[in-house]
Image 1 (cartoon, protein in one colour):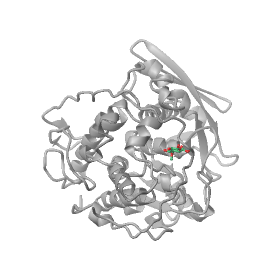
Image 2 (spheres, rainbow, N blue to C red):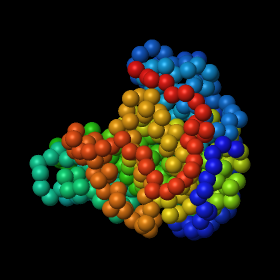
Image 3 (cartoon, rainbow, N blue to C red):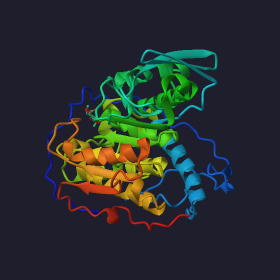
Image 4 (cartoon, rainbow, N blue to C red):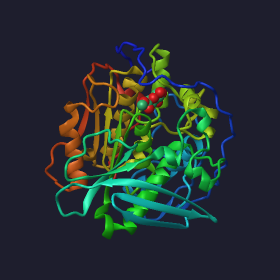
Length: 415
Ligand code: MCU
């Protein structure tokens, strides 16, 4: 087995899983395979997508298409991203619906009310926008999963509080199919909560585009954050919603910044980390289709380093906490180390930050990360090019873990 760890196992868990029942196993939905698709990058066509399973014990090669060809250009990377997105939606997170037929919004006080209609049904939800007390705008903004911001948002940036549980419930495994997303698309929709919330983020940005004159928020400068389960959500929102300008997952752990294969490895080393088998029984973050793969994650044609591929080349700053082994300190470090190679290929290392800092409780932001977080927000949302270093990859642990052994593919230079 590649990689070694000297990290001791911890028995701490951020919050004890409430239920450990197994959800019903539903066969994966069939994805239509077309011979070629138009390049999302706009130049030429993309190779055919093969949606079959694999048997790969290391982290899969993001630079090779499912049909075997190599990614050699930025335009092909956009094709590969479209393929990776399809694979994630098929096997793990469920289908993101296409843009709904209508979205309308009104802004009053600090409440942005959003109504979404599709196929004869409609739902409404609202978010709270807290704007800077000074400055003229239009303001950049950070969408925060949950009603209390979990990171310190700098003074010149608006905060948009998003009650994501209203869109898709996440109480426990009985939350499947519950929430406004499912009122619109049906309780049998394949999307798990992470995808449903990302859809909600898309609708918030639609609404911001419609109401820019009223809100004075710039829809082109919107970041997303959340901690823990909501950190997984923020990561998936950045991956599925290309209008997100900055992705800030905090302590997302397994199912976010962690890779399934590395968690399986940590389990094999006797470490108390959350893995795919556990996570699908605990809650409904993923599609029920994922249940079929959790006992052998080596089958998956991707891992979570490729969730960051979907964000690339857009900026991302990943905050992790090594004091809770449950969050996968080896897993997120190795997974995001592999993820960083994708930004390297794109010549975009300044857009990638991973910072693993302990000495604080779960979801309580440590001051040791303040300058890094501020550099990301100031550079990519506020627009201050000299905001400080954003090419960050660090841990305050002695992990003795070899990322290259787990990511044994070569890194091209894409232009
Ligand atoms: C890190 O996110 C989750 C974790 O996946 C769960 O197993 C645990 O129960 O709760 C964490 C969390 O959301 O804490 C607030």
